[in-house]
Image 1 (cartoon, rainbow, N blue to C red):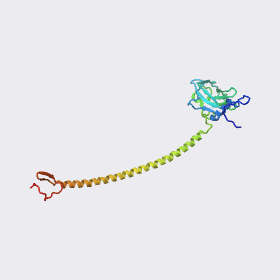
Image 2: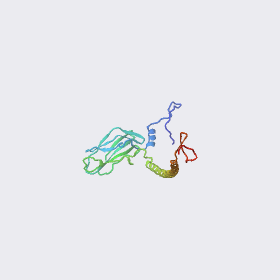
Image 3: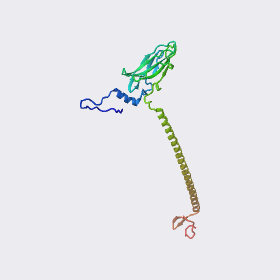
Image 4: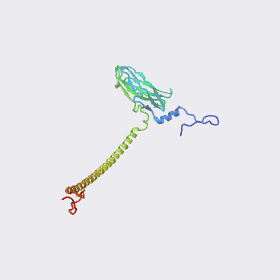
Length: 259
C-alpha cells in the first residue's frame, strides 16, 4: 500500500475532513529517519554511573528515539539496586518503549543471582534499549566502576542513524580521500621539481649573463685606463695668452709660446 504524508485536510460533501493523522504516522516517519537509539549530543548522554560506596547508580540526562518516539531526560535519575548476595547477579538499566502506557521511560531490570543475564523486551509493544550491564559480584559491599559496563554505542543500545552503515561510508570515503591525496602529492612533487629545474636554469643563465657583462666592463676599463695613461703625457698649450688642454697627442706643428 502506498502512503504519503502530510497534507492539509479538506472537507468532503458531508463536512468530514479527508485527511486525519495521529502520532503513529509521525512516529513512522521519525523511525524512518533515525531508527532506534540514543542521540549523541553529549558524551555522557544517558550514561549510567555508580554512586560511590553504595548500591545506587545515576543515569545522566540525554535524548533518544525508540520506535519513532522521542525521549528526553533533563536531570540525573537515580536507581538503587538490590544488595549483593551469595552468588553473582547481573542487572540492566534500560530505556523502555511501552505502547500500552504510551510512554518511554528508564527501567531497572533486576536479574536473579546465579542465573546470568536477565530478560529484556524486544517486541512491538515493549522494546528495551540496554544502557548498562551491572555485574554484582557475590557478597559485594558496594558498586565500583568496573562492575558497570557501558552498553551505549553497541548493538544493544546503538546511536541513532546506525541503521545506515556509517562505518562503511566512512571507510569508502577514506579510501577515496587517500587515493586523491596520493595523486595530488605526486602531481605536486612533479610540479615542484619542474619549478626548481626552471629556477636553476634561469639562475645559470643569469650568472652567465652577469659574467659576460663583467668581462665586457673589464675590457672597457682596460681601454679607458690605457687612454688615460696616454693622456697623462699631454701638456697644456698656451697660445695668445690662452691655455688650451690638449686632448690628443701633441702636434709639433701647433705654434705655441712654450719653448
